Structure formats: structure tokens, C-alpha cells
Length: 580
Image (cartoon, rainbow, N blue to C red):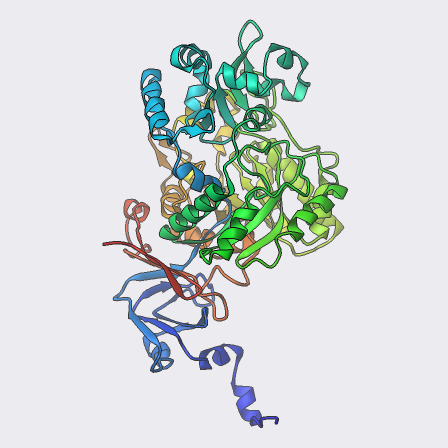
């Protein structure tokens, strides 16, 4: 039987009001609510029904939706925001490191480093099979490669594989036992192709000194024990709990088909290269996946369009999993810039080596690959740290835009060095700047390990967030966890101040607070391809939101840095509450 609805009523009822007519399961009143919806950015109250946002507005408007079964929460003036989104996080790797030996970038003497390794050997945190490893090593150590060898190739360590993994996850140091296992010796160094010669450090006598970067690190990592499926699932659960406690309800995993121990930088994917995807699947099946994960598959930088068929076969294995999407591909355009690695691709050569770093992509054919990715409706997310890598990444995306206007948002991540000629290219090309602005600090990494070796122009525009924003670029928040903390409020405060232990890193590149709030909500949701579902408290979107312990719009920068999340809600369900 067809119901009769008066025409006047039909004309008067909008989509939004239809949403409001639904029953409210949950109502939150008397708050300072930032919606991240530019049409109505700040409101007083929020109504939720069936896991989605029903309506936002004044207390009076939202009280009208309260029914007998509605749960009502008085926010008592507290601040509420959408769930935060991290546009670049290796979260399961982060979960693994949470329970492993980790220096967290602290620099100590080698005697103290030995003492800590002994302690972590005894409690098991450094043990991975028969290998002893410590993560989170500062790049400061790599200039001491020979001294590390004099310590960890002798005595109690002489017959034990020892690996120190850089906090950047591009660099490491391995002792002789581990180097032998990885097949790294003087003969290999002599036989390496020109492009790989700088990926393994060597002594004056031609023997390796233990330092490895990018492809060299791949050789060592591939010989390290791989965590069990149970360990991977445990890491995934830990990652979700930790991120939820920081207010994060979504992230992009930019290397989901690479598992610990797999060669990331020269990865040649097969249908069996499923990486951490089984862990996400198991997490979803356990009912504990209170996050959205946009998982990207790493493609070899020298891939050709036909290789995408292999990645698609991997994608097809993980369709239909709740809260997991596979929206595209991640590609490494270069490495890292800090001395002594210097594998980031630069326009002007490094002053010490007179080399330009390593451009991993082929600029003559990269556009063809990006266009083929774009034609499939997939996103491309490009790691680019050096200014030449950024330029060539933009050139590749430009070819895709010339071939078609697909509307697919692509992104470049890191953007440590960007030539000013590139600033104005982001907006017309629709390229999102996925930036780890926690790194925009004057410290050993950005100053002592970079400034002496790059041009003054390159150094001046390090992490040029404001210059990009001024030219219309969309800034998305990102952490690259476990490279650094995933805490969004730490990163927001750093982007605003750019203050570090060695001063201020280019004050002209500071961002304002509101820009950073959008960077971690609506903009990051767009970067991961979920802006129609999440990223703002717009009626119809999933009700992911957080309650904070302070008014983040009015507190000073230090207080913003120290912001604590009181509650995190995912799809209208409370998934984290801070303990008092």
C-alpha cells in the first residue's frame, strides 16, 4: 500500500531534516563543538542515531530529538571534535615496537647502550628469534659506525646477530654476524650497481662498516625473523587502543603489503605479498577494529602499468572487510636526507659528496605509471623528501591530469625540501600535502645533519607548510608512526611554534591553529579517500568524535601540546575513556 504524503510537506522537508526526524540514540549537550564542516564549524550540541550524525546545532534544537530511550550526556562546556585522522601511519609496525626494545631517539654513550641491550636481552624485549635488535635509534649514531663495530663485533656480542634500527626506518647498523647472514661483504660492495653503492657503508679497507640505508637496509631486514600472526594481531590491537587513546579514529597505512622483514624500498609485489593485511582482517573479525584503515599497497618505483594487475589481485583478497579499504598505491621516490644517509633526491648536490642522492623513480616513465594508477580510480601516495623527488612526483601526477580529470585525490608525503617553484603546483594538480609537522623543529635532524650539506635555498624551505598553504595546497596531518609519536596535538603545537632545542625552524612557515584542526579532520579524511564517510560532524556521516580536557581553541601553545583525550567514540560507540 502506497502512503500518501501531502505535496506541501514534501516541499518543506529537506534531507537534513529527514535525518533529524530519525530517533536519536545519543545526544550531547552544552559543549564547545568543532564540526570541521565549514558551513557550520562551531555548535553547541550533537545528536547521534544508528552510529551516524543526525544533527548538530544549539541545545534547544538538539533537545527536541530526545526520546525516552535516548542517552543524554551533558558535556559541561567541554570541547568535542571529530575523530582525528592520520594520513600516514605504519600503525601495526608501531604496535610491534610498543613491546620491543626502543631507544625512542635518545642518544647515550656506547657503554650505556651496551647496558641497555643487556637488560633488553634479559627481559626479552630485544630478542627476535636469535637476533638482538633495538628500534628507535637516532641517526646521530651512524657517524659512529666504526665505533659501533669496535664495541658490538667483540666480546659477548661477537657471535650474536645485533641490529640497531633507525627511528626513520630507512637506516640501520648491523654487526658482522648479521652482515654475513645478509650476504654483505667486501665482494658484494664491489659488485653493487652504481645506484646502490651508497646504500652500504664501508671501511677504508673495503669491508662493510655496518651502516645500511634503504636498499642496503632491505638486505638486512629480509634476514630478520618475521613476527607470528598472533604477534601481528596483538600489535594491531595495541595500535588501535593506543591511537584511540590519542583521539585517532582513522589512518592511512601506506605500506600494508609489506610485513616486517620484507624489502620495502625495492619491493616487487606478488599475489602473496599481503604484509599486515591479514592482521587487519583478523582484527576486524575480532570486533576490535574501532578505526577506519585505508591500506595502500607499495609498488616498486620502477613498476610499469602492467604490474598493477598483481596489486589488484592482492586487493581482491581483502574486499568487504568492515572498516578496511584499499584505495590505492604508495611509491617511494627517494630516501632520507640526513647525513650520512643522504639518499633523498636533491636538485643541488650535497656539498660533501657532490651527489644528488637517489631518485628511485624513472622520470621518463613515472607519469605513465601514475596515469595508469589514476585510470583505475586508485590514489597514489608518494614518499618524497628531497626537492628533486617532490618535483618529479608532481610531474608524474601532472601527466595523469593531462590524460584525464578523474577527480581522484593524490598525495605527496613528507615534503621536507620543496623548491619554491613547486608551491603553486599543488592546488591545480589536486595534490594533498601529507605532512609530518612534528618534525618541523630546529634540532639535530633538521639542522646539524642537514644544514652543512645542502644549499641555503633548500634549507630555508624545510617543511614549507605555510608557503604551500598560501598557494592553496591542502595540508593533511600525518605522523609516520612509529618514526615519531602519533599524538596529533603534539604535532599541531609544533606546526604552530616550530620551536626546537636549537631554536626556531623558519618561523615564516608556521601554521595557525584552525588550519591544523582541519588538517587532522576533513583534510586527512580526504587524503585517505573517506571524506564522504568521516572527517566532519556532518549529518549522515559516521559519528566518530572525541571529548577533550581543554578548550583547544583558546589555550596557549604548550597547553595545546599537552591536550588529553577524555573519551573517543567510534560509530556512536564509546571505545576509549581516560582513567581518572
